[in-house]
Length: 258
Length: 260
Image (cartoon, rainbow over all chains, first blue to last red; front, side, top):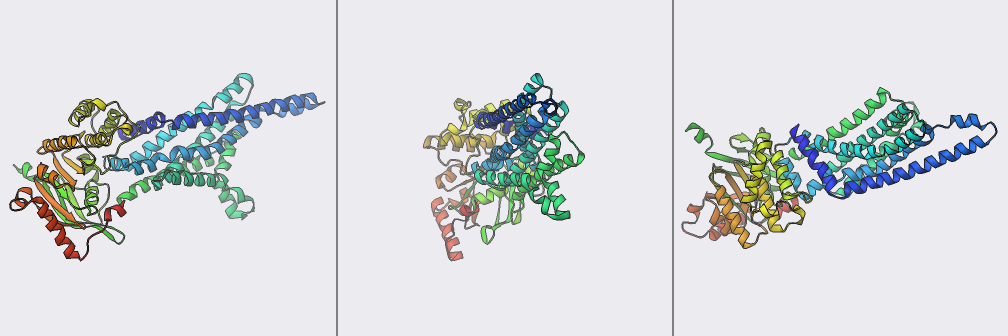
């Protein structure tokens, strides 16, 4: 446990002493702010238009902040995460291998499980900060509007789970190589694939269709954004994260078999 | 007395072989190092020195053969062995964005030192390796000589009984080389040191025992005093290497480079 904390400390420090953390956080907030601004101004435009029409009051009542601002915001942010998270995780193992510090870590009395867990938790804390900072947008809505808090919280939980799964996958691809570009690209391909794997579900038949839909991260995420948290989704995320971490541990450990 | 006898041999390498596919980097290597001794591990570039050291430190597994450190098998008791070894790889394993002090504190912690001991160990390591003036500088900005010394400091910070140093004086200026050699000599007795190099005078000055490896095979293992009774170390080395090449019909290539 102590080793895990030591690794977390070292990893977080390396995010924040280099410009990486600041560039990623700024970029994420900048894009998030842009999405939020546009979604909100479109919402207020629609609201004005609807109320101007005869009998539009009823239609205007059906407009709500959750469906028209928060849900699309969550989906947009999740796409940004597909691109940003592999860039956050790419250095985790690849850089250690390249610079030779991997030799220090693996010849120290640190178990591979502790190393893998430490690196994962550090990246997890980082994305918590990242996603936490976007909390300013719903906070604005809470002050000036009346979105449903529960639905919003479910959406955020979904976003955090998506990000955590991406982190676990990104760390796995980083553990395969000593080249950061390869780690980032393969991480991006893997996370994007998880994102879009459900696309052929409609035409894939009775067995493959539901399977693809279950494997798709968007499927479970979309439910949570709607405010639907079911065990099926939670089990999906937990299994995905656990599997990625397990494979990472095997991948790091494999150096000791060859 | 029994205890002393038990630890008489600190490192025992037996029939160690390492293959990468068809390439044999290390073939049937056996040697031993007594407790408190400094072993000079000599050989041309690509002769298997680094591979052997990586196996002893537990970074790479052997294809066959065993290594025992302080009586513990490096494969079965890997975790315990790793606690007892300080290792300076060929390239000092530094995090370029950390300060020297922060880096050494991190190493001390992952080597399992108690929190209360770390401050004192840090001061001692900084002092011994002449790093006190650069303690707060970022390692990425240091010169090659300083980086090498930080590498040495991380190997000794937790005061391990066994030190494995892969070409510790490479890239240092003459003044620093003299200092580092003096430091290594000082470590003998309390520590068992395996030191790889291809600088022969270094061995003559520092080591008690010499193992010469060529083409992945041990071609000579003896005490320095015995070897240099009648001829210089240079002659011994060249003759040993030549024998190996005749024996195998061809000189060996850069096995280690490929192994990277």
